[in-house]
Every structure is written in C-alpha cells, then in structure tokens.
Image 1 (cartoon, rainbow, N blue to C red):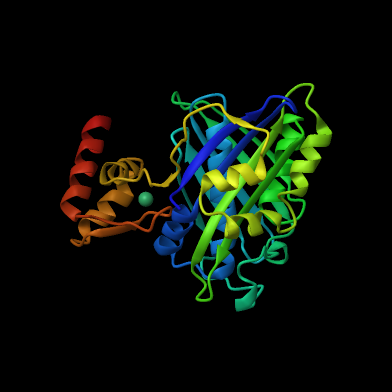
Image 2 (image 1 turned 30 degrees about the vertical axis):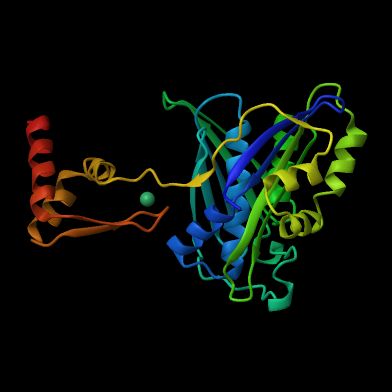
Length: 297
Ligand SMILES: [Zn+2]
C-alpha cells in the first residue's frame, strides 16, 4: 500500500474526513533515526497527525506539532507542508519502553506512560514567515488523542483524531495510517460519535491490518462520504540542504566563526530531522567570516 491521503466529506452528517496511509513515512522515519519500538510508534503517530492537520488546513503554509513531555520520551517534533511533505524527530530515538510483546504489535499499544505529563504545541506558519502558535496540556500521552483534544480546545470544533503505527515481530513499521474528522456547522454529532467508535481504542489498528488498500480503508471508515479532492501524496521529505547549513553558519558570531576556521578541519553538522550529515570546510567557514567582517566594516 503506498502512502496517500484522501479528503472526503459526509454531506448528510456534515463531517469533513481525511484518511491517510503513512506506512512509507513511518518506515523512512525509522530508517533515518534508527527508532526503537516505542519511538517508532510515538513519532509515527505524530507524523501522521501532523500530515493530516497540514493537508486539511484551509490556509497554505507549514504546520508543526511538538510534544513536550515530562515523561521519558522528552520531546517529539513533526512538521508538514501543505504539499504533504512530512519530517520529524524524537529526542529519545531508541526507546523500547513500555515493552510491547511481539504477538501484540499489530494491536494498538499504549505509550502514555512514557509521555505524560506534558504539553502539545502547534505552530502554523505561512510563506511570509508569519506564524500562530497555540498549546494545550496533554490529556493521555497517546499523541493522537492529545492532538484531538488540542483541536477540540483551540478550534472549539468537535473532532476525532486516530493514528496508528503498527510494528512487525522485528520491531519494524508494518503499517501506519490515520484519520482526522472535523464537524462542520450543524453537523450530526451522533454520526461523529459513531465514527469515533469505528476508530478509537484499537479499532483503526484492526482496519489498517485488514484493509488491502486505501479504498477499502475509506469504505470501512466512512461509508457515507464522498471524495472532495483528488488524492494527495504524503511523503517523508526533509527540506534541509547544504545552502541552509551555510545559512545557519552566517548567523554565528565572528568569534565563533574565527574559532572554527582556525581549526583547519571540516565542521560536521547533522540534520535533526533526517540525520543527513553535512561538512563545512574551514575554507568555507573562513569565507563566511570574511564576508561578515566586510559587511560590518
Ligand atoms: Zn534534513
């Protein structure tokens, strides 16, 4: 099953529904960061939820969601563009706690014990660099439920968010996906709660395992809905580049730059998001130093 997001609408119940398969995103994240089981599940759910938020946002721009946890996970971060490019990291990539028995890895796992308490913080920014930030306390530490309560609180809209990242016996991502449902004005809340029952407490995990493709999943989740847009891609893609690394060096002070240039060896920088390694030679650092000195006289 390839990764894709479907945007649909149930006109009778007045619900907006987004459904995504994010298996390849989850696998790419795990490859990039060498995730242990719990990290793969935690960040996998966050990547899916963030992608769904970005793709259902009415305004163009980037959406980032950060989980700041007092629990062992520490911090989870994901961001997504309006084009469905997602990336993210976990501060504790090797977490395997709580242990999840091999024969239970295709069921929904509870990871709240390594997360709670904490806050979920969402930043939406546009192409001009303007941004809006809001935050709410974590309610369960299960990530998808926390994003759901964040939307319910900050947007005052009845919402369902369910995301799953399920692992195989080796601890590798087997299948991943998620659903985001928002009530429109005058929606049928009874229908929303029925839909919630088909998604939460492990129900979505069962659907993901048994669905052959996104069409089957869509039919099982939202039988009364119709597509409102052609399918959108959702992909793991980092926006880092050597130019951006150099741009970060340009923000350093002249003393730091002189220090690095004098070492006569390349300075290594690893991208937080994708693990890509960059090396800036001392000659390149010297150039930045010189242009800085010239600019400031
Ligand atoms: Zn990167």
